[in-house]
Length: 190
Image 1 (cartoon, rainbow, N blue to C red):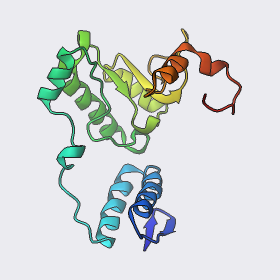
Image 2 (cartoon, helix red, strand yellow; image 1 turned 60 degrees about the vertical axis):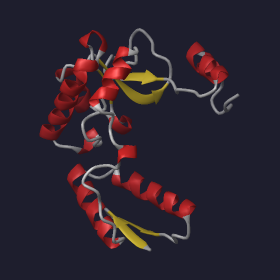
Image 3 (cartoon, rainbow, N blue to C red; image 1 turned 135 degrees about the vertical axis):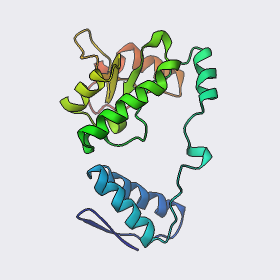
């Protein structure tokens, strides 16, 4: 099967689950680099070429949390933050869409935020000065990137790095202790 995404052309031999996931990964990575309106048009074209009907909204298993679920999490001391309304790559949207995504997501999350402070996470980690300034203007208390490292006191609170949420306790302790930053680059995980 041949697929064009932007100026890239791919040829895939779709012969099972693994090859389909690999194809989806390549297409998704390429789509993320396109302006949002072009990306949406390309998704429709790809769906048409594969004869796939796109759903109006995500299936329940991929849908957002409900307001009841957010309320329950908030009551149990889980911090609720914002990640936009529809998860566009913000560096690929126009000024109006950027402002709408940030302000709308802030207002939806604010009732569930501890102390009324809403924190933000840039979709895909893509951020420039424009998105940073827009997050601040939308009233977010802070924002995180996808840069993996510990913070220091001089960090811009709208460009904060973070650490991996490790599933194994010894890895979590190692990541949060700062030990990872002392290891020579390329030494791998231990």
